[in-house]
Amino acid sequence: MSECIFCQIIDGQLPASIVHEDERCVAFMDIHPLGRGHVLVIPKQHAVQLPELDAETAQHLFSVARQVLGAQRALGWGVNGTHILLNDGKAANQMVPHVHVHVIPREKRDALATLGRLALHVTGLFGPSKPRTRLDEQASRLREQLREA
Ligand code: 5GP
Ligand code: ZN
Image 1 (cartoon, helix red, strand yellow):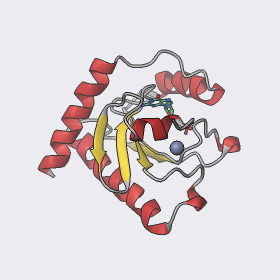
Image 2: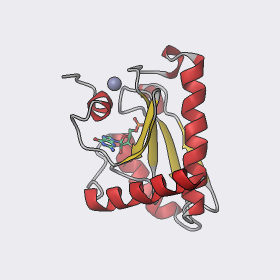
Image 3: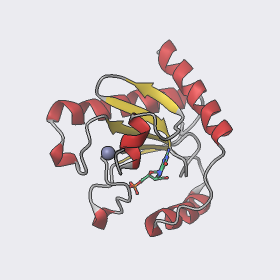
Image 4: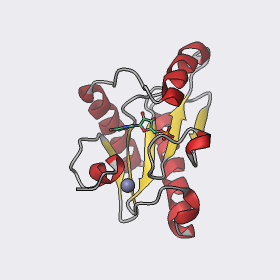
């Protein structure tokens, strides 16, 4: 079994609330969301940092992230703003050594709550995880939106 937790998710060895899957990538709900409906888009190929990925796969990740953003907004999440974020390397707060694009919906006046969660992220503590039932429900709503798009 791979030691990489994201490779374990790809292989179905760790549970995840899947939003999208194709031949190149998987998108799933972040277990410690920084905003309502926070999604991670990862390549199926194990690569620690972005320069290790081929250009087509890198472009594809951002294309899927854009589609996810559209689905989130159709659900009313992040209608006022979204972070598309890639922490590339330890000094940039990359905690999981497998490339991932964050799609983080933000709300008006959520800065204080988000800053608290962000502080937990950068220390690697993360805090309590979101219940699986809630993540599954959000993933199901996003999948439905992506189907309709
Ligand atoms: P990074 O700091 O590396 O950019 O972000 C890693 C992200 O992975 C964090 O937002 C964290 O919540 C998320 N994460 C860590 N472990 C798991 C997990 O087992 N399942 C899911 N769905 N997300 C995870
Ligand atoms: Zn991996």
